[in-house]
Length: 332
Ligand SMILES: Cc1cc2nc3c(=O)[nH]c(=O)nc-3n(C[C@H](O)[C@H](O)[C@H](O)COP(=O)(O)OP(=O)(O)OC[C@H]3O[C@@H](n4cnc5c(N)ncnc54)[C@H](O)[C@@H]3O)c2cc1C
Image (tube, rainbow, N blue to C red; front, side, top):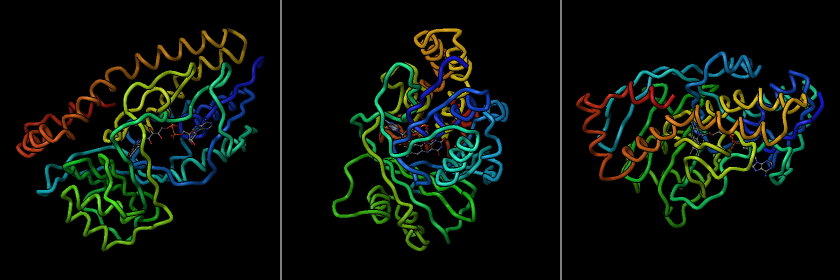
């Protein structure tokens, strides 16, 4: 290969593209600002990605032991809204990211951790959601001794939502997205339960209090906006299109964007096109692939979370007037 490739960001988009390029003989160096393994704010529910995408990227094995998830329920402060059939997998980012980085290094790829680099020509930008002021705060932790009614529970609150998903070893991933501000004085997992109480989900907060919440797995994130992100040249994953977390499709999009980027990055590595041409054709293909999903998800997210419309949404869903399956289809 004529040109080596540098990737900034060793999350799902960066690692899966790095593995796919390395498998095809490209010299790849990846810079990751953090370390492995580590907990990340994520619902840890993967849905939408096809086996073909995983095979093209060469990462199907990393998801082999993920927990299959098929039943889901949507609740609000009044109880059950409706049940939904889903097709997904649950796996912690602690395991998934670490498995992928090991696969990459076993293929001869080079990773430098605790290395935060700047965007530049010749670097594929897979550095995740850019920091932008936004109204949301994301919180997550793992729990044991928490039994779920379904593989996945979604709890819609007055100022956000909470997802409970089965992951490996009988653990449950708890992940919430709430509107700021946060209650004063509360920290760690008690911040999570305090926010649930503040948003009217007292029964769910009681269930979490009765379970074992693992403080060492707690993490939080703020300062982001969903939607199309300001571009840094050749970008993939959340760095370019961040879909609202409620859809459970962000990780799939990270993989899909790596799959879309692969032929463009290979063309550049072989010397068949310039960096700018590879970046431009990849960006245009990503925009085309994700346009419908991004527009639909922004509308659905607003409809479900804005106080004025979320009551309408739950009433329609309770009376089976909300076309859930067609809406889910728009998000994949
Ligand atoms: C609250 C919440 C819940 C979610 N729930 C789900 C869910 O249930 N299902 C789902 O599919 N998706 C979910 N998502 C979305 C999902 O987590 C993301 O879409 C996915 O992680 C995007 O992968 P990525 O590789 O693009 O970015 P990331 O996974 O964020 O990886 C980016 C990496 O780049 C590194 N980095 C940053 N800056 C630099 C730099 N300058 N130099 C080097 N490295 C850098 C970071 O440390 C990070 O490791 C959720 C997101 C949030 C916020």
